[in-house]
Amino acid sequence: MILEINLVSQIPLYQQVRDQIVVGIAQGELQYGEKLPSVRQLAEDLEMNPMTVSKAYQVLKGEGLLEIDRQTGTKIVDQPPNLSSVEVDEFEERLTLLLSEGFAKTANREEWARRIHSIVEKKFRRDDLS
Amino acid sequence: MIWLWIGIVIIFYLIMMSTARYDNFQIVGIPMEPKLLKSKSVQAALNQYKIKITLFSIVFITFILLSTLDFLRGWQDTLLLLILIAMILTYYIIFIQLQDNLNQIKLHYALQTHKARSATRKRVDLTTTREKGKAAPNKRWAWFLWLGTLIPLFFDSPDPILRIMLWVLPLLFLLLPIVYPSSIAFKTRAITTDSDINKAYQSRYEWIKGVGFLILEATTILGYILITLPVMLGWHITWLFVGIGLIFLSILIVMAWNSWQINHLNEDFLGEAEWLVNETEATYRWGFYHNPADSRIFVPKLTGLGTTVNAAHPVGRWIVIATMALLSGLIIFILIMMTSSYTVALEPEQLRIDSTLYQDLVLYEDIESVSLNQEDLDSIRVHGYGGTEYSYGNFRVEEYGSVRLYMNNNNPLYIVVEMEEGVEPPYIIFNEDTAEATELTYQNLLLALNE
Image (cartoon, rainbow over all chains, first blue to last red):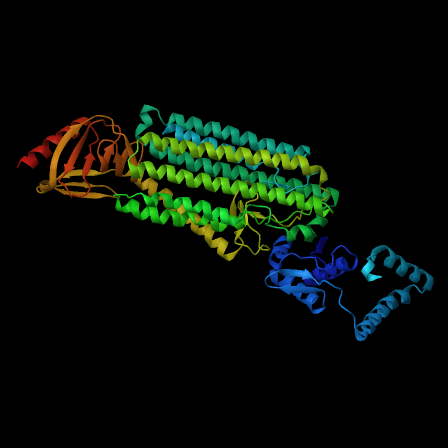
């Protein structure tokens, strides 16, 4: 999976790393149980402070998507973590806000429904996510 | 001696020429996409560089040959050293000029093609980054080869300074296995969206650089052994030249092997490359790798084999300063050696010989015999100074073994002082600047001994 970092973006570097790994897992570019580069390796290749990469990994670990082991290294969890009903509610809330931002400017219900369907169909094709 | 100097110029020439090779999507350490490399302006800059290096190499070889002229003979050592300094400075300036030229061309190209944006983005392939460092030979090999530096310790040496050096030099060689991991820690290339191609490229590149480093390490250590053993075991001087010749030959072979491998790698992968490598990675200041964004002290060399220092790192900066100071000190030391000679004085009770590095006070009663000689001396320097004009220090001489030597090499006549058993050094061999003066000193020494 290719990770692309934009150095002049407003989004913090660690957030960019975290976001792209999440997208990679969701879209099937990264497999469950797959090993990730070590903090040092990734920091060297991105010419970043190792703390930045470490922070991204810690956030992902907190979200239940990564396992960090001193001996075996960092890997994506073997199984997708189960979402609690509280977390599902949170996602729905965030999604509602995001859709509202678009809907407030272009109030075309069919257009948004088509776009959402298209994104889900094209980008999230993993069996284990269906 | 002169052939050795010409050999050094040829090695420098080959190193400088191979530096201008397209290696890992970089040229003289500057990332460049294959399309731009083929452009007329880049090719013209490279040709200009190669012509300059070739012309200056011819000039330096001519100067080295001129230094053998009779009327310059007394100045030969100084001239050769000055030629070496001038050569390093000239090549350094030509190299920096090429880097500047290429950076200018790149900037111009980026403005024309709106590619300046790429400098604000970095791409890595997570799968390839994960495999980093696995394709090169294991670091244990670098440690295993280092053990070779301990071989000379198995042979006993009568010279106390040499004995210390045999313990100190392996410690210096420790730097080789220590920097080996950093010499293969390249930034991985995400040259395409296909991880398999990225991985194949990265692992072959790493393997070439790792194996190249180990062969160079093995060659250096073999050279150290081949130079040390003839000195310690009193082998004929020919073995020393065989050792030096082998080192030169191996360096040339390693360089040729590296070029051959890189050319093949380019042939296989340049067509595959979809986008330019990360732009911000290579920054240079005064020809040194200078990258504040890189947290490493030691970084793999971007041109050729081995490791270099990141001058932007606080520790790296001090390493650069210390190395420069050490080199300057060494040059000043050699210059002092070259401009100084030694003095011989016959005092009432003793023979006194003084030089910058050594002093011998020989009591007449400790002398077993003296003789005047003019047969050629087959000698190897153990430590001391050996120039074309003067040689002084501890030498191993074919006929006598370990001796203290004070010689004007242009005067074939010399005095051999054999000491009583148990007195160190067992022999002192010296002469004056002319045959007449040497003969007079010899007569006076005989008189002093008879009294």
